[in-house]
Amino acid sequence: MGTIRVAVTQAEPVWLDLAGSIRKACELIAEAAKGGAKIVAFAEVWFPGYPAWIWARPVDFELQTGYIYNSLAVESDEMEQLKATAKEHSIAVVLGFSERSPSNSVYIAQAIISPQGELALHRRKVKPTHMERTIFGDGSGNDLTNVAELDFGAPLGKIKVGTLACWEHTQPLLKYHSITQGEVIHISMWPPIDPSTGVDHPGLWSMTADGCQNLSQTYAIESGAYVLHSTSVCSQNGIDILGTQNGLSCTQPGGGHSCIIGPDGRRLTPPLGDGKGDTQGIVYGDLDLTKVVANRGFLDIVGHYSRPDLLWLGVDKQQREVVLPRAAASKQPEPGRETA
Image (cartoon, rainbow, N blue to C red; front, side, top):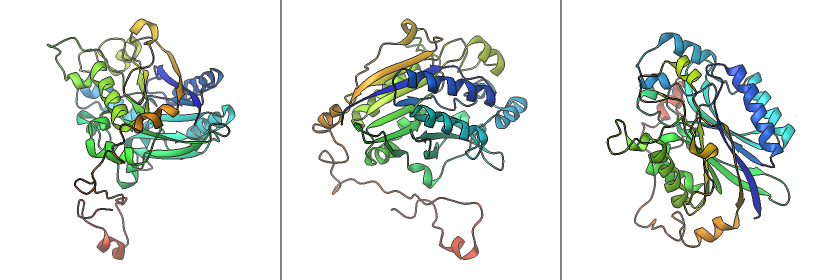
C-alpha cells in the first residue's frame, strides 16, 4: 500500500435541477482530478439536493413532485454522463443521490463509480431517518453490501472503498456488517448540517455539525479506516427554494463542514473558509494507507479484537420483491426469521 490523494466536496447542489447538478458535478469531478485526486466524494442526496423542507412541514405536494422528476435513475443518460466523466479523468466517484425508480418511488441512494467508469456499487439507505420517511422508501437485503474493491492501477493496486449515509452511522449492527467487508477508505455522506448553539440547542446535538462529525470520527475509530466526511452547502437561494426558514434544517446559509478523518479518529484537515459553513470548495488529503494496517494491529473489531464465540451478527441479504412466482413466494422467509 502507498499514498492516495482524495477529494471531499463541500458544495451546493443546483436545487431541484438534475441537469444543473449533473453539470456542476462533472465540473467538480474534473477539478478534483486536476488536483491529483484518485477519489472524489459527494454528500448525501446531492442530486438534486437534500429535501430539507421535510423538517419544516410534513407535506409539500409541489416540491415533492418536482423532486421526483429531478431525481436520478440508475439506468439513465445522466448516470452514463457521470460514468463517462469518471473514466475520462481516471478518478473514482462516490455519489449520494435521490434515486428515482421506474414506478416513481425515490430512495436515498449511493453509488461508487470506478476509475474505469464502471458502476462498481449501487445501494439504498436501509432506513430513512424520521421525516425522511415521508418521501423516501426503505432499502432491502442487497443494500447491505456497501463496499466495493476498486482497481487504481500501479502502484496503488486494488483498494476497498465503502460508504454509508448520514445516521446509518448510528446503527451498530449495520456498521459492524460494513466493517466486516474490509474497507480501507469510507465515505460518510451528510446533508447540510449546522453547528450546535450550545446546551440549549433546540434540536438534537447528534444532528448538528459537531454531532455528525463525532459519528464519523467514531466510525473511523471502530473501523480503522480513513473516513471522508462529506457535507453539502445550502445558500440563501436554497433556503428560498425549499422554504426552510422556520424549520430544523437549512434555516440559514451554511451547512458545509467537510473534512478527512484518520483511521485512529483524528481530524486531519482544516475547515474550508475558516469554518464558514457557506464556503464551497474541495478538501484534499494524501492518505498513507500503511497507517490503516498499523492501526488495526492495535484495534481490529472483526479480527483479533473480537469474540465470535460469545457475540456474532446474523444477516439476511435476500432482496425482497413485490411480485414473486408462486413457488418462490412460498419459500420467501419472513423478515428476521433466517440468518446468513
